[in-house]
Image (spheres, rainbow, N blue to C red):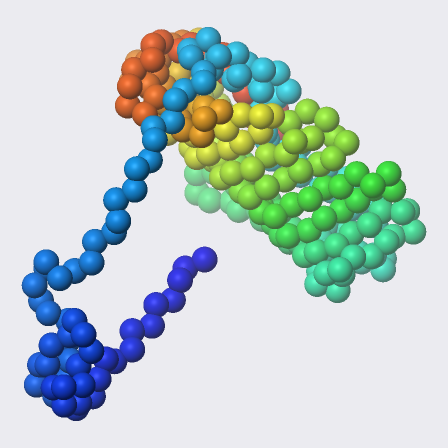
Length: 295
């Protein structure tokens, strides 16, 4: 939340003697002196440097373990959202694809499902000169519960945009996950939830399949930050760009793969090199690639 700072006038036509300590009289008003030496400076705080609890082997193991349950994707979230709403009725929540502000504090459908909050859902199709585009968006602040008490709790949104070129077999997907999504009783990465802001771009052509990641995401006990991270079939799913992994201490390990795709990158912790790390991201590719080839 942005903080609103209101600047109040110090004085209007006040006599010199009325200037507060630290101010000087300038004409008919008081001002702070222009000498920079009078500006307050923040206090110095000793902050002990975090010590890494993971080395290269632990980083690789943490990534591989997390991806064992797959990589967060918008299609799984979409399907769970729609499946739970399918148990609603004409009164509660009253719509098949969204819940409006009628039930901010909740209602129970005849099926035993409980719905509360506000959400939006919309579809859009476009035909351009060079491509056809299909998009959908789900967003809101809501909670749904099944009769067993397992909830889908959401504060955020998901987006998917699929395009198909008209003059070639090339296709692509852009997706985005924002905020927090948790589905109790669902197992996998949704059991603990996914949180962050992560964008995925995927392209399929006659010559290659490529995946780009941008942003941060936390799931299955791990937190990742990606910076122009790219992988492609043409380089046997090697990596370029950078991937950061949060250490249990709270600071980040940064793995830089550079511009030539490869399996390994040089890792550093708070600027200090710690060695080569070779993360296995096959779990991410296995989750995303089938959606690209057969949306």
